[in-house]
Every structure is written in C-alpha cells, then in structure tokens.
Image 1 (cartoon, helix red, strand yellow):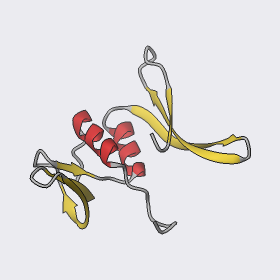
Image 2: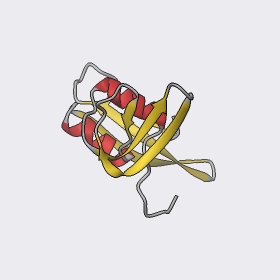
Image 3: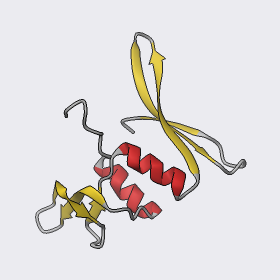
Image 4: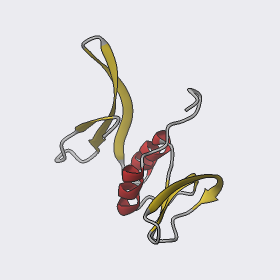
Length: 108
C-alpha cells in the first residue's frame, strides 16, 4: 500500500458496517462469490451494497466519520507507545453516558 493511500476497512469490518446500517456510496467494495467461495476487492467505481453478497469498503477514516455523523458515536484513530513500538488504536466512545468507551487495536 502506498503510504499516501487511505487504509480500507477489512472484509470482516465491511460486513459489520453493513449490519450496522452503513449505506454510503464508496469507491471500493468486497464481493463474495458463493459459487466459487471466493472474495474479491473491487475499486474505481461507485459502489452501493444493493446485493446481499456486496459489502462496501470505505476507508477507515470514512467509516469513523459515518459513526460520528450517523450513529452519533465519537470515534478516532490514535497512537499509543507500547514498549519501543507505536501501535494504532481505534478509540470509540458512544455519546450516551450509560455506554462504556472501548479501545480496539487497529488490526481487530
């Protein structure tokens, strides 16, 4: 990946976003082909998940923006020093005070 490119969500994250109601048009999509049990990532067009086996693949930044704008959940990417290495985390804090905040490693 080019360092200047935005990281896309993983296939598992794309599936969860669809379950959560993500419906923004994206330039990339994962398409799962049941007949061959294969998964492909497509890009360069505008994708909308109108098929059951299509999953929009937004950038991580766009997915976090969707959480903030649509679900009213505060989310950001942050770094923490772990020993001698920096690790990236997604920080998620629901606006609702009765919900706990969560921190996920970026590869989860």
